[in-house]
Length: 90
Image 1 (spheres, rainbow, N blue to C red):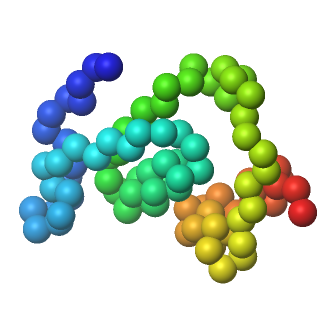
Image 2 (cartoon, rainbow, N blue to C red; image 1 turned 180 degrees about the vertical axis):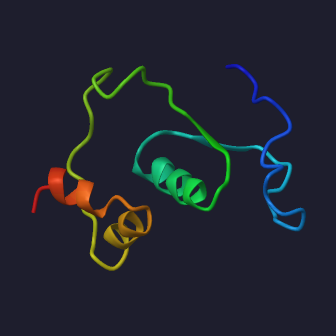
């Protein structure tokens, strides 16, 4: 794994918790990509690492149940509500 170029997030205000820190998320599933996207929309430089080469690298699990007041709300805050509606199954 290659290392992040340092320093990072210096564009954030000096008092910001993540100023000068690297943010790395391991796992590109919904639980990794959602906080990564939320951090991106807040202007945070974040890197996501995934072991699998791509979505077809192995058989994926079953359906994911996203409730309106939690998982779907997170997608809405990420700006991904319409994409969810395009690809989700009722």
